[in-house]
Amino acid sequence: MRAVPVWLRHALFIAALIGVWELAASQGLLDPAFFGRPSGIAAYLWKGFVTDGTLWRGYTLAGAVIAFVGGSVCAVATGLLFMVFPGFHRASEPYLTLLNAMPRIALAPLFLLWFGLGIGSKVAVGFSLTFFIVLSATVAGIRSVNSDHLVLPKALGATPRQVFTKVTLPSAVPVIFSGFRLGLIFALLGVVGAELIAAEHGLGQTLAYLQSTFSMDGVMGLLFLLAFLGLGITSLMNRLERALLDWQ
Image (cartoon, rainbow, N blue to C red):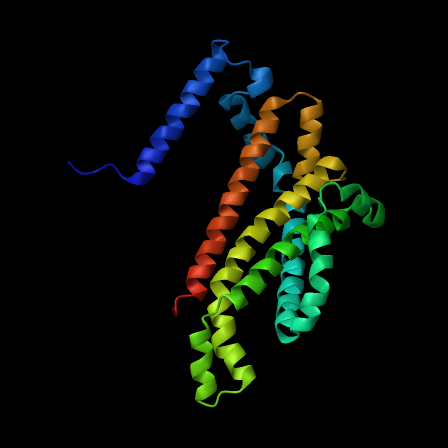
């Protein structure tokens, strides 16, 4: 007897979980006012994606992408600068540690005051989260390069620039990509968190409204949507990393 495929086992488990959830809600074992019910969640998502299309508006995803790209570019540039000028790194490290220790979500009202209710304040929160994550990964990745891999090119006459571009940076890419993967998730979390506080558009703003009106089906539907967005982002980054590191 052939083994059951993994995807089929996952599908059966999810189907059974949804069935038990729906049955418990219909029998009153779970209060739909607090937990929602799968049929109501499906109806909300169908309306949001098919009937009126309100969930296709990409304010949240656009803000997360802008925050991730901006934060990652600045972080990698800063990390490379630190490696070129170690003294500058040592001098700025205490201040960066202090800034990184600040809870960015608690700073969201300040970003709202500076950048307004639009996408700018959401990007600022996501940027601040992404920057420090990718910066730490960049510095750690460059420092983790095996010293033996650096000695041989120098002995063969390679210039410092050639050693950095041909050995150090490619060897650090896996660790940097780990920072990218985590940074993209935190960019999305930062944007959604800022939208929950105050926003004109976005999934976070919609989530806050649904919570205030006790529409639990909508709340659960958006939570599942955000979870699948995070899963999709992680899968995409994993595929991109494998494609770029195919040479290893």
